[in-house]
Amino acid sequence: MVASYFHAVQETFARQSLRPAVIHDGRSFTYADLQAHAREGAGWLQSLGVRSGDRVVLCTPHKRAFLLGHLATLFAGAVTVPLNPRFTREELRYFLADCGAHTAIVGDEAYALIESLRPELPALRNLIRDAAILDSPKSTYRVYVVHRDDPCMIIYSSGTTGWPKGVVHTHANVGAGLQALAQAWRFSPQDVVLNVLPLFHVHGLSFATQMTLMSGGCVILDEFEPQRTLTRIKECSVFMAVPTIYYRFLEQPNFRELAKAWTKARLFTCGSAPIRAEVLPDLESVLGKPIINRYGMTEAFVITSLPLDGPWPHGSVGKPLDGVEVQVDAAPGEVGAVRIRGATLFREYWHKPDATREAFASGWFDTGDLGFLDANGFLTLVGRKNDLIITSGYNVYPQVVERVLNECPGVRESVVFGVPDPHKGERVVAVIVRSDSALDETRVLAFLSDRLVDYQRPRTIHFMDALPRNAMGKVLRRELRDKLSV
Image (tube, rainbow, N blue to C red):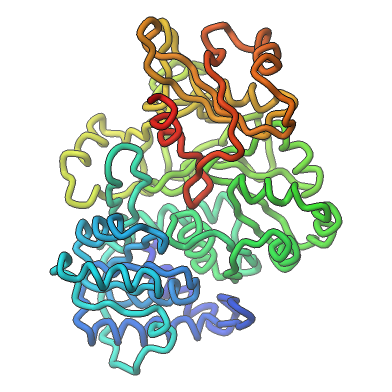
């Protein structure tokens, strides 16, 4: 049986007690240090009334405070709720009210906003500044017996329609998901991971941090700054990033020179979105290694990954991890809905039984993604169901059009979506960020003329200086569509 998350963490803390676990802001902390901080922090939270199952919000940009708050919550038997410290007042009100937060550990900016919301949050008993968790008062820790099916995290989904849903993860499914990923990526106590990703997202918190600690490795917590990050990668064996980080690397004139010092790096991964195909060869030639693309989501952690030793089919997100089943409701090679099942899946949507039943109605979890499986079982994604464009009765998959557009000379990046059309049902719209200011619609359409079928070609093209993105670098496609369909 796969170890639950809490028990796996405890075993690692005991086994690796004298090894470095975290490096942050010039200081190194061993696993014994982390365990001591976790127990002291848990005892303090318990003294403040935090009990098993209570929700503890973490809303701070300070990464060590965030991590210690998470571990203290874990040891207290409570439930971590990570939130973006840049959320607006209304967003914070929604999330804290929805999860019924008992305690919130927050940075200065969020503190003021949440303090003003206290009258609207009757469940909130404690509002704590993040600095306090770094040196919490000595308190007696009462050991809590954690069960496999107990919830340990509620992470809010990206909210593609309406307000985001709280995704409830248990100790069992987190343990299964992270151990499957550690096996696929061959993690060991010798690994050092440079984590420049935000901890309020599953990518930075679970894949880069929790998995590293479960494996007995060391995580360097830092903020992304192109030159500093390029310099620090030489200290690590694994670097996880999103496409925008790699694009910023390519903009640095000394990227190729600095990369020569990365002799320890064995693995580069990319998540949230695929790297543009036209820049991938140049990027990988500098790295000297392939970038391992993978497919994950808040509800299921990493679902598929390209194998470390290849093959790496163009555009694919790889094969299912151990213990994960992937089904596409179409013949091999044809596009269909992607469904999954396995021990890594979340338990439920917080206080949304109807949404939970709907998601699992077929016995599989419907991811909302569209893709196809090749003869060797490799998955390729073509977009979200809600992003599918139907024009004159034909299906157009935005990612297919974007891949071709991004190959056009003068295109830095693009996004494609559909807007209502009285004659066709929908028409294809493209938004392009140029690398060549002379690029115009005529040149783009000429490039596409023999590369896309007529109904796939954009009928409207907009040029912008930059695409709107969320905190993890994902393009806000719906925001653009709403703005440009008016």
